[in-house]
Amino acid sequence: MKKLLDQITQTMEGAFERLGFDKSYARVTVSNRPDLCEFQCNGAMALAKQAKKAPIDIAEQIASALAGNELFEEVQAVKPGFLNLKLAKTYLADYLREMEKGASNKHYGCERVAKPQTIMIDYGGPNVAKPLHVGHLRSAIIGESIKRMGIFLGNTMIGDVHLGDWGLQMGLIITELRERKPDLPYFNNAFAGEYPKEAPFTIAELEEIYPTASQKSKEDENYKERAMQATYELQNGNRGYHALWQHIIKVSVTDLKKNYKRLNVSFELWKGESDAQPYIPEMVRRMKDGGYAYISEGALVVDVKEETDTKEIPPCMILKSDGASLYNTTDLATIVQRMISYNPNEIIYVVDKRQELYFTQVFRCAKKTGIVNDDTKLYFLGFGTMNGKDGKPFKTREGGVMRLETLLTGIEDKMYEKIMANQNENQTMSEEEAREIAAQIALSAVKYGDLSNQASKDYIFDVDRFTSFEGNTGPYILYTIVRIKSILNKYVQAGHSTEGLCVGEAHSDSEKALQLELAKFNGVIESAFVELAPHRVCAYIYDLANALNHFYHETKILAEPDEALQQAYIALLDLTRGVLETCIDVLGFSAPNRM
Image (cartoon, rainbow, N blue to C red):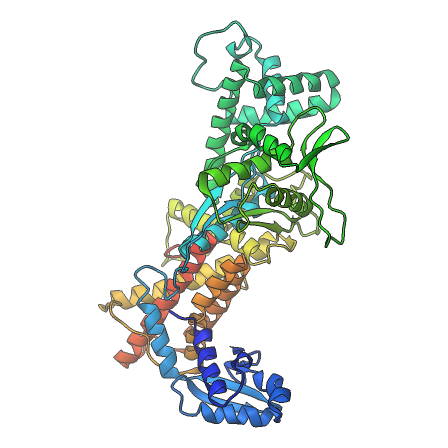
């Protein structure tokens, strides 16, 4: 269904045209003075010079032309030339009834895109053999929410974790394993049999091996050289090393999937840098043959600067002087692979904003050398830093990087304590249920706390604020949904049914305010996806939750004696619940049935 603001603007445009005015001036916006009106049009003031009339005269003409229109309860011309608009209660109720028809598929009037796109999102980037830490949080949850919005609107969204699985860390792990377990068959070049199916290490051992090896390589040049040689041999077909590498991948990915699942984050593809390697030779050949790549100080590079650049954009290096590939090489080859396999209309990279220059080089190189089509969009969504209360990047108390599972467990424990402390004689909850609900609330706290900030901005990760049931937080949103569910359950337990109920005309200012917020739903979801801005969805559901709670505190719902009016109230609550639950699902978390 058409967005409410578009319908109002279309009606305004008709009035402008009937009076001989340019309809481009008829844009309607949500009022910045809700105490005076609900919507406003300021076009009369911009039109005055062209029309050679006073703005207030134009505004009064338009107000007269709209008198009696079914959309409006009131159209008022106000000096110096504002048009203040209030929507008709009947029209608003009809609009929400149309939304109710979309309850079965949970779209509530939000239409799918006319031309579905294939969009790939790169929002993982973890290295194998390393645990997920808080630095992986933003990419995962921002990328996941954008993917979910795209799917909701009917696009084909493909999320790729893009593992770091082919660099020096592999050689370091192999070298350290060789020192610890030299008798393993992987290190015997004469071994011709089948290698063991089970890995010779656990995930815990693997996560200890890598930092140990990394530290040794910094202190021992010989050790580093052996690790580099092991990396070279792995990448050039050493059979035993390749078998070890497969064990490393399997053990690491199993653990990564477990932790991403805890975040309610998933990927359609579990590709890594290694998957791009076969595409590099042909890609390099085409760059050379096309005259794009040339040798500079021994390295193979492609110029990517443009005449309009206001700052220096260095060439994109494709191969080092010794012929070794770089991150640039792998990322470009990954784009080659994605174009061949999926031919996406767009590829979105959800990455730390400090990498903007790097991706500018990669994107320009991909465009210039024909790796992507002319109309393929490459988009860099750079996110800011997650900081502690001291304003510095979030760390453990000891100053180290916090593991993601440690962060989540700590917040889940905090929510569990709150749940158990708030129980009374009439509300008992098993430990299992309390733990499950605590995990749901904790996830809402983490995700909403992050996503409510504009992605590009740094923010303070304040656990105490994020876990509060008051204010602009995930738990507050969940509490509002649970409140609605409780009212609906009581209504049903009293012998009534919620089936077939319809929203009615508003009987109070708070009821109309809630209805107006609900009517914004499809516009919010569409604009949030176009702008890749999950924070817009967060802002919307916070306003919607506030409007619901204001209506709840002012209205006797279950005690309303007028049955028809009570049914309309229940329908309004059910619609609000549905819209809120759809929005939080898009953000990547869910609400329990009770708290």
